[in-house]
Amino acid sequence: MIPDALPAGAFDDSLPTTSTTPQPAAAMVTTPSTPSGSLSPDTEKLPSLIHDARTDHLTSGGEVLDPQDPHSKGSSALPSSCTTSASPTPSRLSRRVRSDVGSVLARHSSVGDAVSLGSIDRPPSEEEKLPPSKIYHPLSFPVLALLMPASIFGVLARLGLQAITTYDGHSIFPLAWIQALGCLIMGFALEMKEPFGRFYGPLYTAVTTGFCGSLTTFSGWQLDIFESWLNASASHRDWFRDAIDGVGKTVFTLAVSLSAVSFGAHLATLVVPHVPTLPPPSRRVRYVLSALGVLVYAAAYPAYFRLPAAYRHEATAALLFSFPGTLSRYLLSLQLNGRLALFPLGTFAANVFGTALLGTFQVLQSVQHPHPLGPNACSVLKGLADGYCGCLTTVSTFATEVIALDNRRSWLYVGLSWLVCQIVLAVILGPSIGAGHVSRQITCRYN
Image 1 (cartoon, one colour):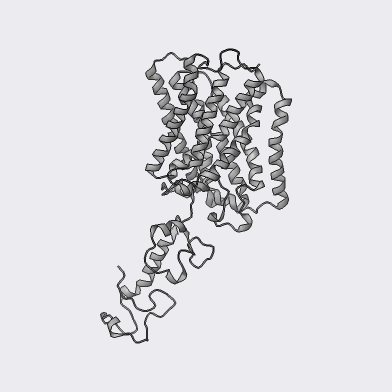
Image 2 (cartoon, one colour):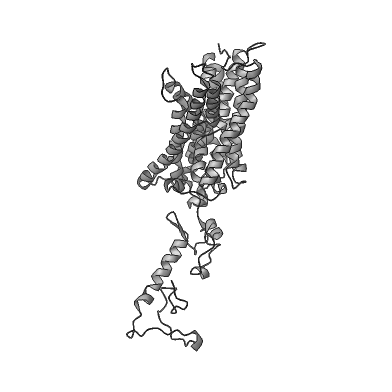
């Protein structure tokens, strides 16, 4: 403990350790006599002790917030005249700590509320100590332009992985591979947010929100679980095995997704110290990247009409609706994720709404009578399901938010998201299947 009265200059190493100014008798403190020109050992340690305490209050996750820096998060809450005052209140301290989700994942810690998780989908900003010239507005053209090709590549990766991992006798259901890969890349990119920002900030949003968000799918996961309850594959098993299959897909997907995000963040901690500082791209290169992003997405339209019709339900229809789905999720995240402290409202709304849409499209694709839909309508519905719903909903961001929240909020977030989506699917699919107008399997014919 620091004594009530300290020798003058103990708060500042640059001041003398003794004072020649006379002190009032009431303020004087009797201390043991020491040799002339020296201080007691306890008194000599006071400046370092106070410096350590001040550093502890201003440090979080390896970042020291300089009270003399006008751009520091702690400058407004901790003026220079009060640097050695008593410990700040928790609310003031939380305002000074930078919200670094990647570091939170790597340290196995958590955040106090969901408001600080709004930065997951945003481009790197002043929180990553970037100069104003390298900070991009979340809705700026370079950010949106790179979301276009990232969405397309995410959909292509998802459809490709699903085709590769779907075979007779597979022991791991195909979506598990997709969720694991997307969450692994998501965790890696979160820890690399500052290097992304120092090079070109829109690339971070393209990788996380665009590619990983489009690669993973929350609505597809929920529909897969619901089809297990119904035994949509017409497997020879009883209701108890149906329940085991649905619970297994729930638990396994959660486990592999959460583990992959954490593993990706830890891998990045090994890579970040060795990442060279690359010069940011020139203005001409940035313009070229934005133009290429727009052209890549624009090429999806002639690909849908020019390529053979057999490719429409397999890929080209999904590419058309990929960017609208990603953009819808991105806007919901920007507008709603900071509104509620309990859990990220934007991601929750995107996942629930996308699951409801996917259930509706599933009903339309499974109509038995009066007449099944034609090939073109079936291709469009398949594209909406794989493209728009697949990109509107995400497991990578969902898993990141679950890990970063404290235990009570994370379990509430998981349970509420899962339960609401299953109820929505039961309301949409249940009456249709029960009335006999809709099959448990898709009846659409694409040829």
